[in-house]
Each structure stands twice: as structure tokens, then as C-alpha cells.
Length: 254
Image 1 (cartoon, one colour):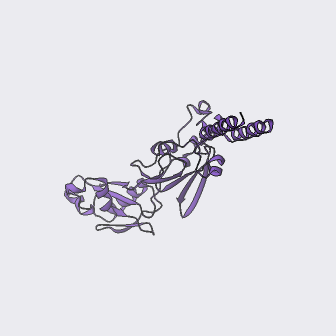
Image 2: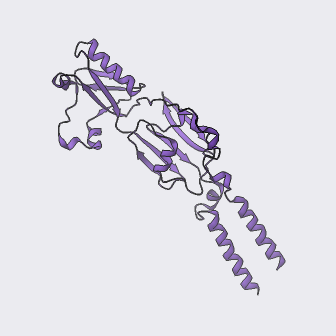
Image 3: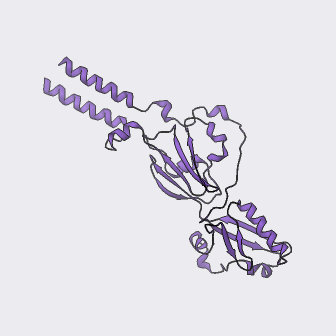
């Protein structure tokens, strides 16, 4: 009987050792240390397969009209329809506009693309003082692993924070490793991988950790989740099963 009790106690101790600690669970544990810190923003660059909305304006709308895609139909007011009628950036980073024809915008920020298009309109004698607006219509990121709502998620802003992205995915699960969230980004023809520790606020001062178009976030499960093969969802469930086993053993040994 003593051997059984010792075995059970040892098993429970091993389970408790595998449990997620408070320091592994809480976000931004040193947040107060980064209060009033400066915010740094960097603009995202246009990539192949981006869909752009380009609007050219002028004091005389009739003069600017030939440089715009015709979107007068009321059926094209939705974002999805705007995407279908937008400019698709080729693998070479080009778009083809009316009259101006091919323009290379890949690798430029939307603001830089506006300057480039405006420059061509003026320098080639088409318009005197035009306005140009460039916006990416298909901003999205992918989040996989230990989140409550994994998948491909769209957003309308130029970039969002990592915490915004996690919020859109309905937060991390109990089994997520918060100390090593992976951010995968394709930029300037290279694939970059960042490792982010969400238990500290230090990463918040790094502008690279704002989520941009086509980013992929991977949240890894902890060892307990991996070892259980997904059958046992969290340590509380594991302890409940252990308690049930202990109860059965005590009843059988009476």
C-alpha cells in the first residue's frame, strides 16, 4: 500500500513540475518599466501580389479621370470588389496604370509610390498639380498554433501591433509558449524570422514587431501539450484525471 501511495505522489509531483508557471503565463510582466517610452513607426513596403488602390485627383476631376480605373458602379463599393478592380503588383514589383502604363512600385512604401506616380504625371506633362493616393487593399496576416482562432485574418490598417493580432485570433491558449512566439516576414527578397518573448514588454519598442502585410505568426505548444498528443488539453485536466485514478485505487485497496 505504501508503494502505491509513493508512486502516486511521485506521479503527481512530475505532473506539477510540467504545469505552466505564473511567470510563463502572464503578458508584459515588466510593462511599468517601459511606460512613457517613445513610439517608433516604420511604413510597410509594397510587395508582389499586393493589390493597390490608386486614386489620382485634380482640381478638375475630368482631367484626372483618365488615370483612374472606372469604379462608378455602386456594386464596386465593397472592399472585395475594390480588390478585384485594383492594381495587382507583379512578381517584378510593377503595376500597369491607364496612360502611364507600367510603373515599378515594389519595395516602395505607399507614400513613396504616391510621390513616384505624381512625379510621372507632372514630368510627362499630363497634370500640373495632381494628388495621388495609394493604399494596399489586401492586408492580411496568418496566425497558427496555440491560439483560439487560427487562420488568415484581414486588417485595413497599414500595420497593427502584435497584441492586436493576438486579440483578433481570440488570444493564446493555456498551452501556448509565450516566451517564444515566432514572427515570419518576407522582406526585400528575404525571409526573416523573429523570436518574441511576450512575458516582457521589451519587444514593444522594436518597430519590426508591428504586424505587416503577409506576416505569419506561429505560436508553439508547451511540452505538456506536445507529450499528450493533444489528448489532454491542460494541466488542470491532467490533475483531475490523476485524482480520479487515485480514488479508484483507494477504493480497490479498502
